Each structure stands twice: as structure tokens, then as C-alpha cells.
Image 1 (cartoon, helix red, strand yellow):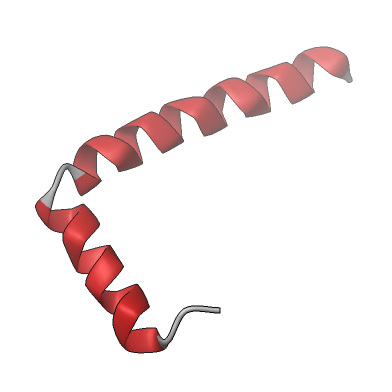
Image 2 (spheres, one colour; image 1 turned 60 degrees about the vertical axis):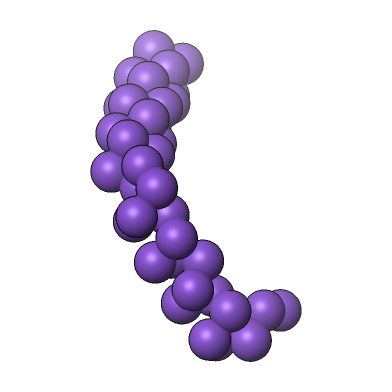
Length: 41
């Protein structure tokens, strides 16, 4: 497990370097995942 300071630095790095874009990709992937789950039911 990473030390907290290293983790915080990583989060800051993501925020400074396209973190928002990463969030958009993740949100889109999650939405597709939920849609797939609904289709399977």
C-alpha cells in the first residue's frame, strides 16, 4: 500500500494532468457497464 503522501501526490498529479478527462472516461465506462447489467437481467 502506498504511503498517504505518495497517494495524495498521485491524485494531485492526475488532477493537474487530465484528471477530469479520466473521470469522464470512467463515468462513461461505468454507464456502459450498468447498461450491460440491465440487459442481462
